Amino acid sequence: MIIDTFDKESPAKINVTKSENAVRVDAVIYTFSHEIEEHVLEKYDCEKIGEYKMATGSHSAYVFNYHGKKYGFFKTWVGAPACIAPIEELTTVMETDKFIHFGGAGCLDKEIARGRVMIPTEAYRDEGTSYHYAPASDYIRIKNWKIVRNFMEDNKIPYVLGKTWTTDAYYRETVNNFQKRKADGCISVEMEGSAVQAVCDFRGYEVYMFFTSGDLLDAPEWTMRKEKGQKVHTQHDTGHFDIALALAEYVVNL
Image (cartoon, rainbow, N blue to C red; front, top):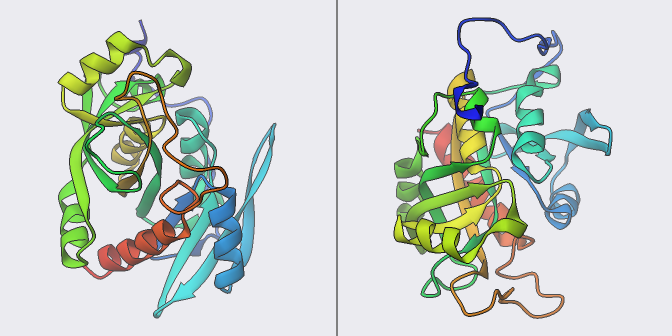
């Protein structure tokens, strides 16, 4: 069974070879949004240092300097297996132990306003990737949620705390499963959180995670909660990259 697949007794058949030319950075920020990627490339003096490649195409990896620190940046893929691939392959182009993970997430509570920052405290493991990186359990603890909370409080950024539901199958977020997860304390649903935490725990990395409250499941019918062409308060809101960069600076200076 998949819940029995975690194997810490034998080596992996495929391994990443660390590059001697990997660029050391203080932290890495990644985005799921092509619009945020365009914004960052326009606003910051980014240097391309490599690419992450898959059969569907490639994404470029960049570094840029900000307030005397060096940060890595790239656009990742949606879904747990694809999202963790560049984390695993990081050492082919850059070296760090800190990651900022942010992006849009579905909302399971109608009382949480559109665009509000949500900080996950635990992630329900409704995906397959994490079971290869951590022993089976329903939830995985989001290790650094208190640090993210402290950052939001220090910067007077409104936020909501709660569990998140990480799923592989967003077209199978059924009414019964939604009700179970909400009753269990989940306030968000997304596709990568539990897997990213498991990989970072396994590899000895630190990940700092927050989401943007997006579409709403807590209603008679699913709703996007946005106007056509709207970017503010969505996963393409460049203001949330500003939060991510400030969070990176905060954790680097701890």
